[in-house]
Image (cartoon, rainbow, N blue to C red; front, side, top):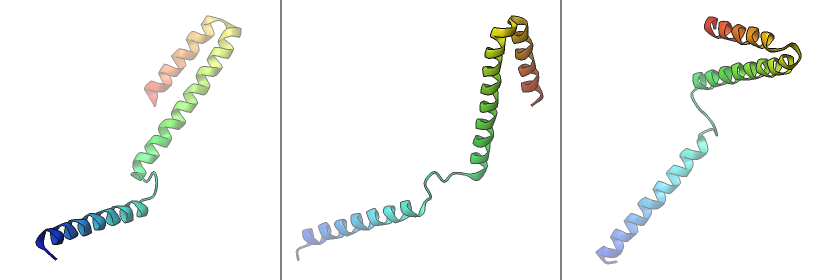
Amino acid sequence: MNPFEMVVLIVAIVAVAGVMRARATHRHEAPGAADPAEADRLRAEVRKLKERMHVLERIVIEGERNGSRALDREIEALREREDGR
């Protein structure tokens, strides 16, 4: 075996080993695994946004029935709730 063939063989072995190591590392990672604190924060944010969406839907539906005064009161209540957190 000449030196050129030996270099090519070594490079090929290193490349294959790198690919195998990357695959093994990727398999052991859980899909979507993130920082648990970040996941909890995102869940809380989604819950809060769903609640706000529900309130806004109710405002729109009831606002059509009760007029703009009720809408103003609901918006102010949301602002106060947001400030109080």
